[in-house]
Length: 296
Picture 1: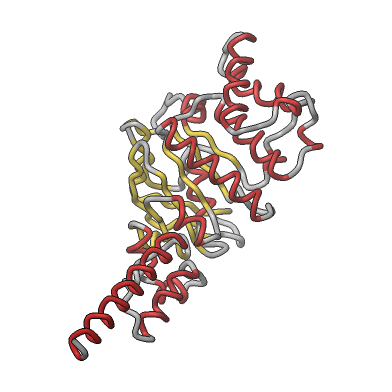
Picture 2: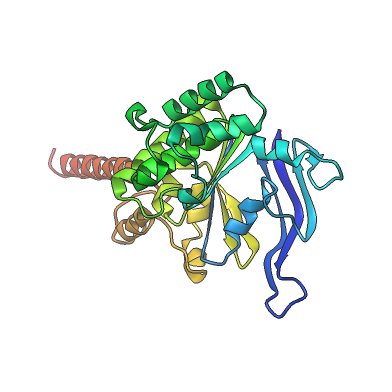
């Protein structure tokens, strides 16, 4: 099972003075169960790209396949696609509208035609999965903190039991703890359920820490598509398009240039710390052996 895009193009306001080619001949495949990061500068096409994945917008040309079926074929059940590919917007208040959180989370399963009991079971399960406190179940979603709104919005999508979870900047506007809480929860969901997760983020540190594959968008085109280590090895090219590598990438390069024998492909703080300690131990052992040889 997978999502596959073949030569996707998308043009906003086509045929008008405001015409903009937002996606240009994008082809890629995302297998089931992968954790993918999508990065790019503002206007690179990353949000437009992910809105194609559940049929929210339709390509101007090209083909989109879900589970080997062309979603643009006549009669394709688009409602079913949107149940399988859940999209959480950057601003969760756009998705929260019911009188209380629990009723809001029940909306998706209810729209799928499930009974009231099944809807409630799905809602409780989803809210527990995202770590949402039960004491707030009957509170208005508009009275929640930013982090709680994100959890409620994600729960509303999870209650439909999608196979793919698409998150557009889910930590925007949150403090560091709130950001870590949300992304740790998403990583836990991925590990626990095996669902595909597609994460759009401007934080290179977050992307490096959580995903196994990165797609870099630039002016509507796919610029890079590889593992975090391989993508961030192109940090000079990323800088040229308004992006950057994680801070540890620059630190490791600086240490290497100053003579410490470190590998420069670390992308997380934990990896960098382990590599620096290894290099220091190696350096210390080397000095010890040299001294012992000179002064037996």
